Length: 257
Length: 294
Image (cartoon, rainbow over all chains, first blue to last red; front, side, top):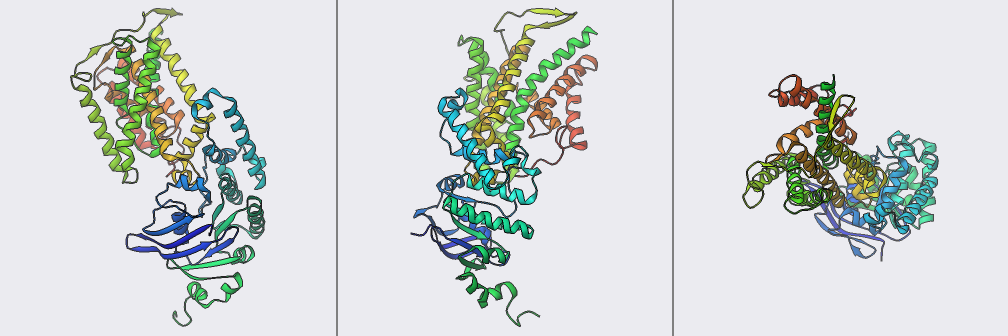
């Protein structure tokens, strides 16, 4: 059974078909790159999988379970976490709390237990705090836990988003252009980090990325989208030679003057 | 001089009550960007339930306050569920109109004879009122009760917002609704909690107002509601400390303009402030920039 299975997925916004008859399967443990020109529908796929927007039709299954009609927070708790193309941290909140708020949403003790500071509630809070620290250390932000998220430099904000997503202990991680706006050395660190967390958490990763270096370096398989559909699929080296991919990015030879 | 100080103390008492109402406006706005125009009417319901509690039902005063807070918390949650949640992804004006509808509904429903009735009622005091003077300034134990209750509630709110999971989730939702949903936070329950807390604070304000000013009727909530709304805007809508600051200023403006200008001009002066703030500094005293977009 694939970790993520998308079949006949459609999404229209008014007259615009953002995703149209999309089929895609991601096996457990894969690191799949999702590429395609701007407007191809890649981010819409992420929004559909995470439940942010409802599908017009089609089916999304995660570990064999249909995600139809599930609220985003339920899908997250099933084990699908994501980052955003345009960073969406809780900006006015500390780095630590950005991660803690996610860990807290998972814990089970009630408000009464928290108010009464029962032993279990206190123990869970302690554990969440420790886990948050570990996650921050992993992405190299351990020393900045007390700062406001908005005060972090850009690359660090991207890493914090990753730590926040990992706080859900996902099985499947969706990364939306994690390397956007990074300089080459930051990109190198990021690739190392993605490989590292994938191994450590036993993740399956679906990655949208425009920087081909990142895709070629990380991904075992690449899926190319255009006009809301998969137009090609294969190993990174296959894809680089694929004519429809070149067309999608560069236009048909002779078709544009 | 003692006279001025006494007026300032009166203003402080009124400002504290406004603060309890303004907090609900600002918390709800912070979390779903809605001006909950029914909020003043929740304050009114709180006043009635509290007063009925320690008079007709014979509850001890603190218990009556607690019951009023509980009833209004439930009322706030129901209002959100029925009148605002179905409109959450509709244009914002729709929820605003719905809020005005809820406000009118509460006012006229509570005016029915089998509810609270349309008339003014004089509120008996729940305890003996005593006055004392310190350095020539006279104050009453009512003032002390109001101050103590409000400060205790503000402390509890501060604790809730900054020391608990619930508070963290509230702040996350107010900063980025969608990101919060996508990070496993149950946004619906966080919004319900916000309405519950805001409405409970308004209810406490309602009971204190009734005890201090001794008259209640179903349209009681309109004027304090509008003043508290002004206070929330003055302090910077969506900003919790701003609501308290704005309310304390509005309390002084009300009392001092009634005392030293004319009580007829009191409301005109108060609402001129609303217009001035919106013209000159729409983000309010503590708002340095546009409130964050959801």
